[in-house]
Image 1 (spheres, rainbow, N blue to C red):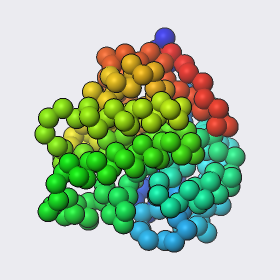
Image 2 (image 1 turned 180 degrees about the vertical axis):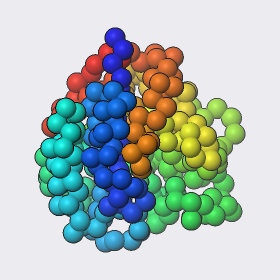
Image 3 (image 1 turned 45 degrees about the vertical axis):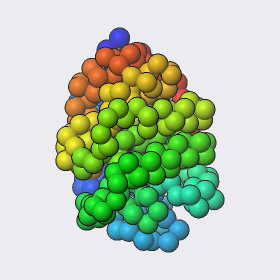
Image 4 (image 1 turned 60 degrees about the horizontal axis):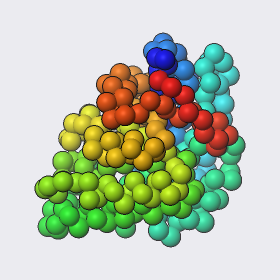
Length: 265
Ligand SMILES: [Zn+2]
Ligand SMILES: [Zn+2]
């Protein structure tokens, strides 16, 4: 079995830091021979407090853009998803988003530690002046909480907190273990996200040790590019698939109407 992975994590210009119409992403995927793709742009928030997501009033346009890509590239199955930020007090909002469209999947993300958009380069100074262990503890606590809400199908970029290279010393499995327990308990999938290769940390999310533990725990897996431009689609998928196999995975997930199935790869 050598089926290429589906790419379920791709953005649109509605989030204001991506370029290219969905149809261009779809054409790129077709050219690469990906079997299936899905869009998962940054969700709206009830109060608009950053500038890297679609506005609430743009939401219908997002859904219609994906529909347009489906019509223009009918050879390729195109799924409708959303990358949703987890907030401790945001569960009603997330549940409401979950009912807004015929989703194929929802991706849950921890970008925010309280009011700190921890992966935003303009806020990287906030890593200074506090122990990195404290930041990691906070991050992983939120990651586990997000998984356990049961509102998401896939947890995004599991160790995103390493994006700028801030990592505690020593064996990091102490942080991974409760996070993996949370995804197991919630029955949610995780992604290998290749975009990390192109950030300061210069490696995929999550770390190999995380993947080895997740594989042992039989956590369902997808491989994602987190494309913010058509040329990012499927980027480094061969390397990601090798890593997944190395860590013991033999199947990847496909999603349709929020139902998951596993296919060999
Ligand atoms: Zn983004
Ligand atoms: Zn993200």
